[in-house]
Image (tube, rainbow, N blue to C red; front, side, top):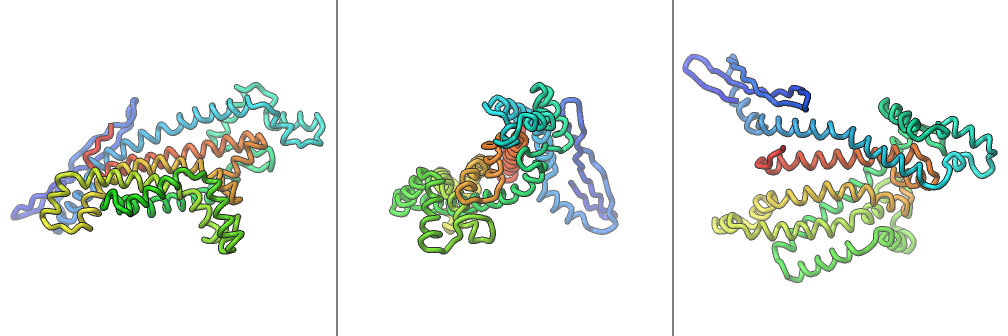
Length: 365
């Protein structure tokens, strides 16, 4: 966006970005329009263009569209893998659904109702056809749509995962920064010891210790279930504490590398305060590795939520999927795995887009 101010009139030139579909993907283009506003508003438009560069926004949009177009083939490949694994596991899901006292006629009826008596290829194509219409199938155990079960349990899993990640970031990053400011000191050595203990301790063991201390002994927190903030404290600590150690060690190493750069010494020489040097200059450049680990650890937290939800009887999607695996409830397992995969892909897309915001020099191919 450019603007020229002559004596008689004001000419405003605005560059528009557009996205046009092509056989190979999406093409980006730019077109220019000249405007003559009746009042002097070109300064406001110019500031907006400076805050939101059109080229960066167009590149991010193009990259996001291409990544989202890869999501359906990826989910299709995951559905094939999960479908084959579940059907080759020993055991008859129809008999498990019918119960131990069911007759052979009842079992055959369940197979016919769910299409389990047809060839595997036919079963898969029927499932994909339903999936294309947004139908994830019906549970063998509860005879309710899988989408309803996911809609009921997914908010609990997202709540637990977000609380665990928030704990990891809020505690881990400041600990790493403090350790990097005074390396090899008492605080650094103490935080390193705590980080090693946090990484080494299994999640289920930590959860049992917390239940024994805060629920059984002190009676401060409820031992299981989902309710208010008190029910969330122990599951969030169990899920997020090992990742506090990960973020603290990574923040320490990246901050040590950045604080050793020449521009940091120049800032100190100019008399800039330590607070501004650390949090304004150093932390912004050390944030990209932290954002990368954030995307990777989010997927790990979703996987770790299965164990935590089982220990604390948290009614989340991980526990819903685990019960379905034990019962060989095929449609529930397939639906939950697909939702987990889509969440991981979307969070990694957000992380990739955050790179361009943190550092505009990063190029998106």
